[in-house]
Length: 301
Ligand SMILES: [Zn+2]
View 1 (spheres, rainbow, N blue to C red):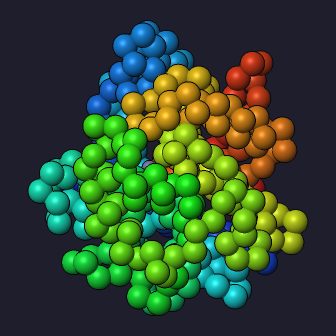
View 2: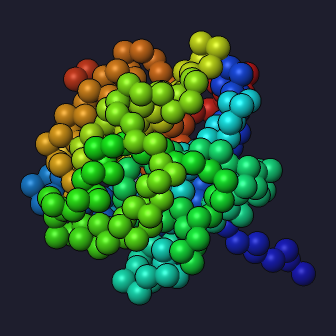
View 3: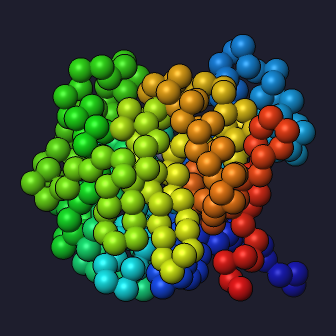
């Protein structure tokens, strides 16, 4: 008898040392999405995006979109950045079949972290795939945690004044999930510290108050850029192209260029929520633009 097929199996947890910190990237889930275009670059950019996909040996008609929260153990606190999709699909009729079920808690368990171990949950911005795992059945998933998020992002989603049509449901989710946690939340601005060694960086645009976070221990640095760039080829090689899910498209494009330039110039290690797993790499400046250099073994040395 020939051996039976076992089905696909892919890594979802990666852990490494960053100075005195321990960092784990944990894939909550992934979505298979159709068409890099027109999502990236609209109809006007379609030919450019297709050419870029072909040049980088990836499919132009569908792409894998991972959701990868990050756990940082500073030795004093366990900090979780973003919470994945959680029970969004199960609890919201509108999202059934549209977002994958979250696996963050189960995978954190495989990595040795219990929900009650989490001291601080940082929400980089208010989009569903980042806030979805905060609650289940209306109850906080991380029962002992305090929360940290950007004041500007909270104000935008809570007030709901300039939310575009496509994000109306996102705003309802935010009011339901995040707003009730306000009394346990610290609201910060760029430059503020979350805990010692973790500092907020302005990444406004994709969400009006999106924050990136510089994580630093014993001289080792990692920038968690969250959703600054949403695809490892298109958003990095053509940061100017507008993306349908960016709330402030001009600002998002300007932010991409500013942050790409910073990480390329400073040769910073980057973690990105939607970069290919383990969601880590460097950015190289190539001519007038940029290229993602996926992490290989540098963090294992
Ligand atoms: Zn996202």
